[in-house]
Length: 405
View 1 (cartoon, rainbow, N blue to C red):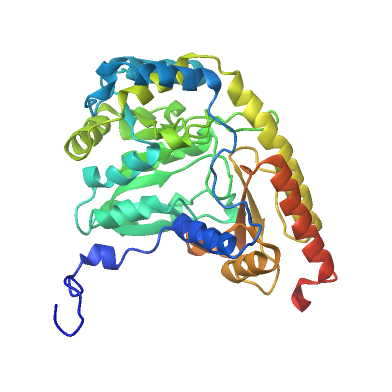
View 2: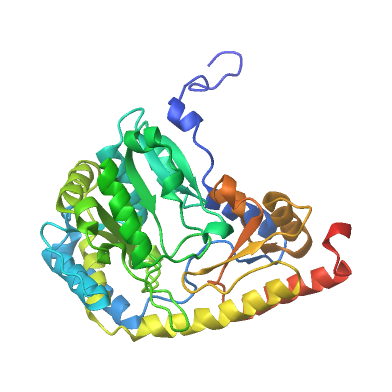
């Protein structure tokens, strides 16, 4: 070392890392940690992480499997045959769809892993991915890592947060390799029907585009609504796959296990990428996933009943304090408008500073998320009530006039 300079200080990382924006939820978690460190009682409605434990029968299976020495060795990237079969069985029971477990099903180390990796299957430098805005940030991040460009599809309240594919310029559509979809939608909670998915299939066939549908919230639904799978649309298997996850359905976010189903060629391409980059899901966790998929399913309806009560409370309070919100039919989120005179970042900062309540700014999901906040329903009831009361008291203290705050 010379002149007090540490070795490696002039080391340069790749341009893709230099250009990488901070992941949205890392910033939120850091802010929460900072506030707690100075004694703040923080209540977070930020991250969609189920607050109740993984069901006991799944944990018991995991414990037993973890004691079996055969599960202490490297797993296969393609996953256990029994797990692929269980995934296919679940799709048949839930959606009436039949998949070949050996060719059309692929277990993942959480859906996020597959979502990030699949860009490597389709995107070469300069290729285009069609990405919803607002949307899950990883769609664009995976595209960037593969050297591609993101063309954003505006999702607005006027179009029920569905992309208008007729407005995609022909030259863009001809250059696009993939089209991302996500319904029930994060962050807006919008839903799509089979008619919409049929139009997606027609668009994909016209331009020879792979459709990548992200469906981890398909089992989180309310009232008399029941989400459909993209794969139910006629011709969907010809053009695309669907990602799904056990994280939200079975409260298994910490175990990192998901899946992709659909077009055999796409599944094979993703498997080839994965086999070169990871060593698969720990087998004990795979057995726990099999138990989740084949075991009692009443945990899903029980969790949904809890979320529905929270949804009703959140929407009622938000509307009462001037933050316009509609009742979502599915997903774990309420999408609400910020008051006049604020952008989403400023409003969220004001909430954190003056109430110690954390919500997610809509701008974090893209340009067209500006003007909104996302409120997660995965906060325990006592904390949820406490946080909502703080928001109502804070609003009352401003004499019910946001513009004077």
